[in-house]
Each structure stands twice: as C-alpha cells, then as structure tokens.
Amino acid sequence: MFAQLAPARKAIARAAGALALTALAACDAVPLPNISSGPGIDTSEPVPVALLVPQSDANAANIARSLENAARLAIADLDGAQIDLRVYDTAGNTQTAAAVAQRAVDEGAGVILGPLYGEAANAAAVAVADEGVNVLTFSNNTQIAGGNLFLLGSTFENTADRLVSYGARNGVDDLAVLYTDNVPGQVGRNAIQSAASRNGARVVAAEGYQLNADSLSAALGRVKPLVDNDQAEALFLTDTWEGGLSVVLQLGPDQGLAPGAVQYMGLTRWDTRPDGFSLPGIEGAWFALPSQGASQSFESRYRSAYGAAPHPLAGLAFDGIAAIGALAEQGRSDALSARALTQNSGFQGATGVFRLRSDGTNERGLAVATVRNQQVVILDPAPSGFRGAGF
Picture 1: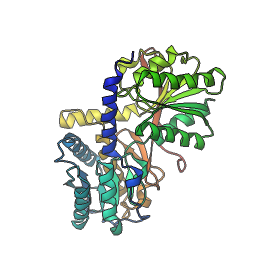
Picture 2: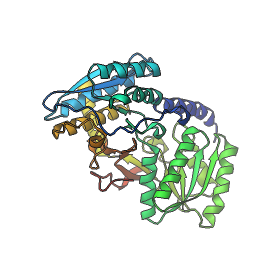
Picture 3: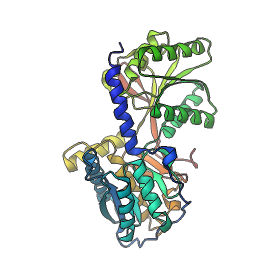
Picture 4: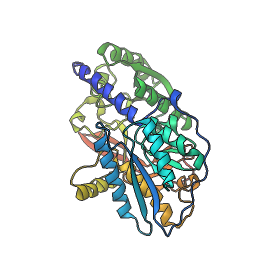
C-alpha cells in the first residue's frame, strides 16, 4: 500500500522546491516600512507597470512566459485604461531582482508586478520601499507580506478560513488536524489553527506524520479515539496528491476513520486528480476551489490567444493587471497606492473575485466542493463579491 511513498518523498522534495519559488523563510524576511501611498498617475496616459519574471532561469522560463502572456491578456480586456507593460528579467536571482526593481522605478514604473520567488520579492520590495512603490508579488508566503509588499498567490490561510467557517456554520467545529511533518504541512497546520480561532471552532488535536506507513498509521491511531468519543467531528488534512494524500485517504478508512464517522476536509486542491475519486476517504470530503466558471473562461481565452494551456500561476499576473486597470478605469490618480489597491470591494480576476488586504495578504472567493459518486459537486459556490472588511 505504501510502496508509492518512495516516489512521494521525491514529490515532497519537489513540492518543497516549488514552495521555495514562492516563499521565503521568516528568518530571512526584512521588515518593510508601512507604505500607504504610491506614485500618482495621469489616468489619460498609459500606466507604467514593471513585470519582473525569471525569463533566463532555465527552471522557470516557461512560467515567466505564461505570466507575461496572461498579463497581456488582461491588458487587452481593459476598457478606458491603458497599461505600459515593461518586462524585466530577474534571472531567478535575488540580487538581480532587487537591481532590476530599482532600475524599473528609475525608468518610470509606478508599480511592480512580480517577482515570482519569495526571496526575490522581498528584496525587490525593500529596494523600492523608500520611493513609495508597491510590489504585487506572485508569492503566497504570508511571512514576507506587509509594508509595500502584497501577495497575489493563494494562501493556506484563505483556504483554511473558507473551510473552517463553512464547517462552523454547519455544526462541524471540533477539528483534528493531520499534517505532513515538513514545512508546507506545518504552515498548513498553523493556518487551520488560526482559522479556527477566527471562526469559533476548536482544534482538538494536531498530529504530524512522516511519509511512511508506521508514522501515518500511528498518527491516525492517535486521532481515532477522539472521533470515537465524539471529541473530533472533522479530520482536516494538509497533504497533497504529489505527497501521500492518496495513501491517507485509503489508510484512514482502513483504520476505522470512515467518512460516515468523521468529516474529511482538505487544505489542498483535491479536484485535480479524478483518478483518486474512488478512494474511500474522499467520498463526501470538503475542499475548496476557485470559481469554476471564471477559471474555465480564463483558460479558454488563454488557449485561444496563445495556443496552449496557461501555467497554473499565470492567472496571478492577469489578476495584478486587472486590479491596476480597474482602478485606472475609475479615473483614480491614486490607483497605485495601498489605499486603492486594498479597496474592500476587491477585483474580478482570472479565477474569480479577490482582494488585497492592508497587511499584504489576500482574500480570494472560493467555492466549497465535495466528491459524490466520483464526481465533483459544489456545496457552496464561490462568492461573486465581498461584503464587509474581510477576516
């Protein structure tokens, strides 16, 4: 059963590498000043936007190309605003990212879209903070957010909040967290714990496991008495298909944690692997996903324009341009300021509605979905807009 965990370890290593593309450890983050203003713009003229992507990085050149394509697709959508997109190559290097960010601002850029890597994004934001220029990075690491650095990447915090709040509204508020004992798993665990605190739910246990049968079996064994004694109503997983998720969804029910006894919940996208829909633990499980209508529309338009599917991160560049363009279309001379970029109503992006928050993180409108009879079913649709100030 666990023979697949050897390649799963390699997948986790790749996942950690991918996380490094969009994340920076807290100990390396440099505190940024609180920037509330940005360069004013003349809305009758094209808005100068710098796109920082790793064009010459052999490991990410395809992502860079897809990000630029998506940005240009968003520009073509604008009505009443013009964007002067200036593309700069970071080469996937932190020092280069800082240098080209400064050069972009020296050459007139009023806002920076990118970079891709979290460490590079932090360096770029530090380089231009004293000039009041905001940076909208493709990173999803909340540890680097703040000041003039805003995240466009989807965060665990956002997903956890959506699922925990949905569960609390439906009487499922005592949670056992089963997490992979590595950096992504620990970040996911922390996000679930924070979401529980915000939504009146409780984490009654948090059990970590290594990617081997004995460790996972032991973790499940520690959770089972809590379920049997009605102390835990849900089992919240942080694992991925690239890791050991398929094994967890098989082994959990095998050890008596059937979907009828506990509500399975997932922090990652469970809809991307239909070949896993026959696993016993996934039937009736809850997970979050973006607006399917918006996502399909974006992918269709991208394919039509460029003859290929967009990279999964491409929509983030579309979103950055959509936000800047929407504010410019409103005739706002302060369109590049933090005050404008964090408007409560948010923006319509490639995968649905989203908004940037004053702490540099973001909130995205997500749907809650499940699997029934090996088909994805939407339980609670993604919102089409935001109400209030968000979490």
